[in-house]
Image (cartoon, rainbow, N blue to C red; front, side, top):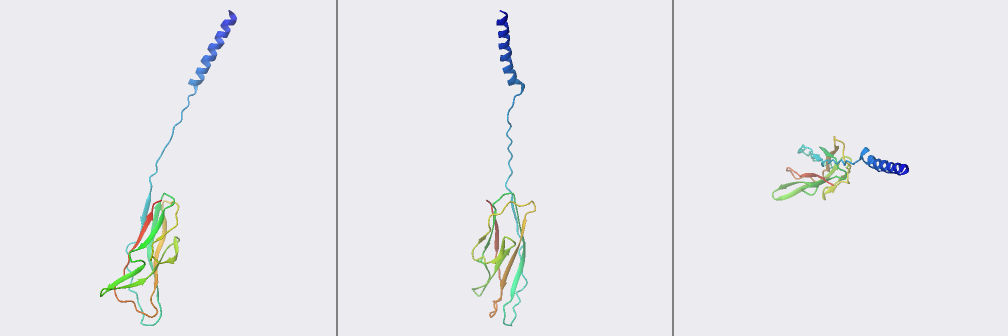
Length: 168
């Protein structure tokens, strides 16, 4: 009988020991989720009015370069792109007596577009990385050369360059 009581006590201790392990150190996971909203901001220069294009009566071409201002992009996303397009397909335009006159030009946009490029067709940058909080600044500039042999038609020439940031 003594053996039976000892075996019974060992069985009770073993069963209570198993339950005690379940209650002594319970564990559960906690999932944390946070959402960061997309942020994409574009600042373009104010409208630009150039001084008169001074054409000499002498033969020879004159180069003109206009620093339009800074384009600033701020983004917390990778793979954004910037695009430039021209309302007049890359020319300054005036109309006199129902005849259109144009002056072709090229643009640069800082390090994103360092080679002077015509906007006869839209231009789009390669995919870019997210920016620092201060953004990425690129100088927009326009350049053209007057004709060596012809005067430009008198008038006020204009075009609109549209700067667009494309979300990934």
